Image (cartoon, rainbow, N blue to C red; front, side, top):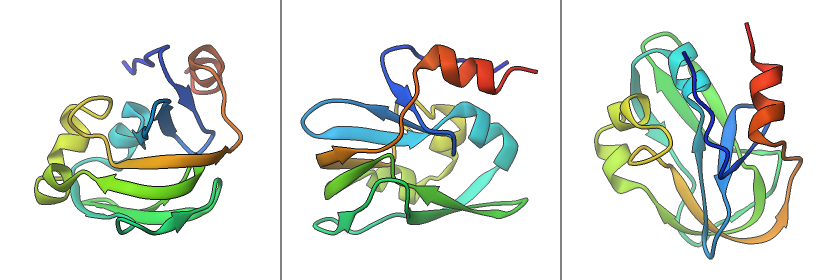
Length: 123
């Protein structure tokens, strides 16, 4: 069963955002379970500008290739090299070691609470 930490916000595209300076985001365990075994990550480059609600990368699994949508606008300050080197981290710990991108936020996108995300993804 999926869990949704309530110390972060979510997108309808199944990304999570932990606010901070920089903010950190990744995909939810709902997304990682739906994708299956993740085998490759294409993440934005450090220094690049990303825009909330737009595609900023790709996640490839044994089942499919899915787009990664940015939950915020801003400048990428770090990508998770450990997850790039071992994409299975996203499956095993999507809210911890499997984070994907850290960004200096200029604007947040359409975010929902953990309770709203859970209600949307119940069943």
